[in-house]
Structures are given as structure tokens and as C-alpha cells.
Image 1 (tube, rainbow, N blue to C red):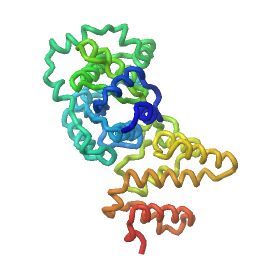
Image 2: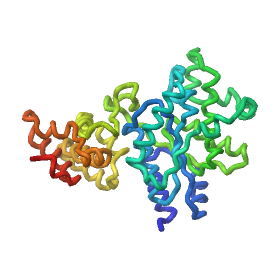
Image 3: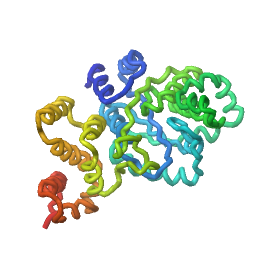
Image 4: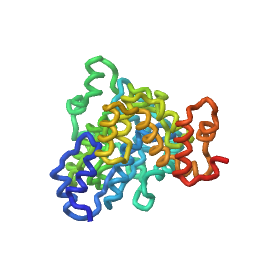
Length: 343
């Protein structure tokens, strides 16, 4: 059995902030599987590597014996999360949200253990909340408290409009934690306000407050903005293996270390050793090759085994590519026991 200290070490790895650690120790000491919540609004049909920073942590928690609640925000997706936004997000139709949600459930089990994952839709409890219930929820929170949130404060100072329904988003996300009796909620650093709101709403409903774990936001392949489908800077987990490999090879050497820190399953001491080698004159391209191979092997294993090789075949057979690239692409096929890849 994994000790509390060992669990905390795994939980903290790669995380930005854990609140409140003493409370989490107490929950872990109970010996029961924790109810671990993470919410995803299906605003786009595909998951990308930015999402997997959080999903990988969920898998680690599953491996520690905890119960994952994968919340698909089909209700909140129609409101539109204002986190990190400088303008009101256009709400999606229920049809769009439901279509995107179906693809999420297909994709998430590329990483999570299906048998230890409970997929829930927050419309199951929020659709039934009437106007009186929503007013009671809103009555316990003030506009001043909402304006403590950085993105709201910036828009208010800039005299940019903030719609009333945007104030409701953190409240209804917080109510999700009540409905699910969450012990721990995960989210990106831009979600901290919403996650803390969950603690407050749980207290108001007589529940022990959840602990929160925030994880860094992964930059897109442009190295500037958060990875986002709308910015066209993503690496989708359902893209052909060759495209995933090629995009990872295209990132800058500086960004490579950030991706390795947040996405690699290698032990920290192994990563530090690679950094030492590069600092002493080693070629960072070799590190990038290894990392790209790891991600392709993890995210595209099923596609390769089904023969959906996409760009991998074209990369291996192109005459204009250096021999070492062909070697490393061949390595992927060998790793995945695909002798049919090369004739």
C-alpha cells in the first residue's frame, strides 16, 4: 500500500499549488478512495495535449486507488467559462455541446482506466435547479467577491462588459462539487477562483470542503499562447501518429523542456540528467526525439496497431528526411510491435 507521503509526492509532482495540504493528509489518512473531480466543458470536439496535463494526473490518482469523477459540463458549456477571457464567451447550443461531449467520452479512455472512471454530466443536477434554487445559490455571494477574480477585475477596470450569467458560472461549477461530494478537485491555474468557490459552496451545504490541485497551463506549439483549438496551436490526441510526431519535433528547444516537464512520465532525475548532457554540449534534438517517441507511443498506440499510420509511413519513406528521423520513426513501430509497417 502506498504511504501518505508517497501519495503526496506523486500528487504534487508537476502541480502548481495544493490547497489545503493538511486537509488532504486527513482525507488520505481515512484510507477510503477519494472522490476526485475534474470538469471539462465540451467547447470543442477534440482533446489535445494541453488537456492531458490534467488527465494524466487523474490517471496517477486512479493508480493510487482513488475514484475519478470526469465531469462533462454540458450545462455549464452553454454558459461559457469566463476564465482567462477578456470578453464574453459566446454560449454553445445544447446540440453542439452534446456532440462534442460524445467525442470526449471516446477520447478520455485513451488515458483513464474505464473501470475506475465515473463519467457524469452536470446537466443531471443543474437542469433540475429552478429559478428559486439559483437565486438562493447566488444570494450567498457578492459582486465584490466576484470582482476579486483577476479576469473580471481587468475587464471592469477597462470598462468592458461583464454579463450577469458569467458571474453564475463559478457558482454552478461550485455546486457540481456539492452534487458529487468531491474530496479533491483538479483544474488549470486559470481555474483557481472556480475551484475555491467549490470549497465555499460545499461549506454552505454542510459538506467538508474539497481540496484543490492546480496544474500549469501548457503552451501551444507557438510557444506563446495557452494551447487552444481556437488559436490553432494544438496537438490533438486523436491526430495521426505522424502528425503528433512532426508537431512535437517542430517545437523550439526551449519549449521542449516545458513540454517534457508537464507531459513526460520519466523520473525527474532522468530529465535532470538529460538537461545536464545538453548543457555540456549534447544535441537537444536527441532529447526531443526521445520525448516525441514517448508521446506517440502513449497517445497513438491504438491508431498504429489498427494500421492508421498516417504520416508515419510517409515520413519513413520520404527521401528528403535525414536518416536519423527515419530511424526514430522506425523505432516507434518497433516499440509498438508493428512489423507490418516496413516491407
